[in-house]
Amino acid sequence: MTRWNRRLLFGAIALLVPALAGCEAGLNAPTLQFHQASSGNSVIDGGVNIDNAFVLGPGLNSTLPAGGQAGVFVALLSQNNDTLESVSAPGTASSAQITGGPVDLTAQNLVDLDGPAPQIVLTGLTRSLIGGETIKLVFTFATQGAVTLDVPVLPHADAYATYSPPPIPTPSTTASASASGTATASPSATP
Image (cartoon, rainbow, N blue to C red; front, side, top):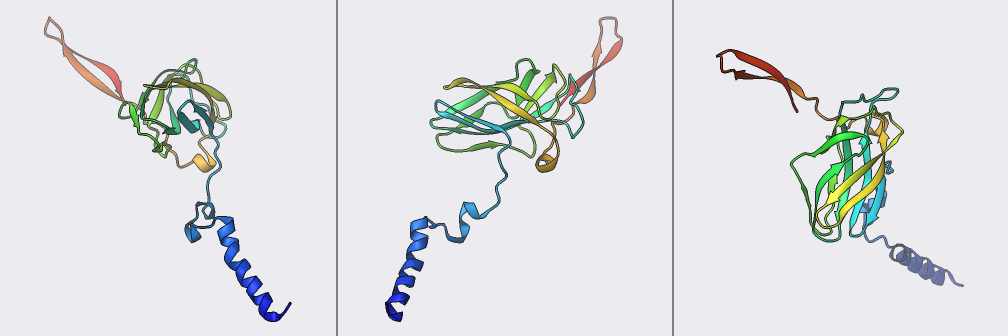
């Protein structure tokens, strides 16, 4: 093999390697950027993908008390148009609120409800929560129906230290007048 043939062979290999490797993205390839490993749980049920679902728990060596709140973080993808109507945590929270109401899912478009502030908040925890345990969440969709998933409670530390816990309800007073003309004030909680 002559020097000229070797140069042609190495030149052809240099041109073919990127094409064979599928590197059409060049220097903007997603694989060149750091991606946090998924710590949450994921499921594909029918036409709905629930990805990296988790509950933000307390800091290390702490407990979220019963009666408190916890944020839920998740990414959603639907094969067809659908709507996330509600979320519940049976045995863990008395209710859950979706900030802004139901979430519309258009076909093939990722809806990221993943931090740093929670858009789904579990309220009225019926038991205390610690990092490392799992709880059951039920996501209810208009078309797909209910999808149940066991999700981890991740500590508010390390990669999740910048995530925000749910806002603490602030007490306010409501004044009312009775038939006798006396006014009374009663405290209430407003998120």
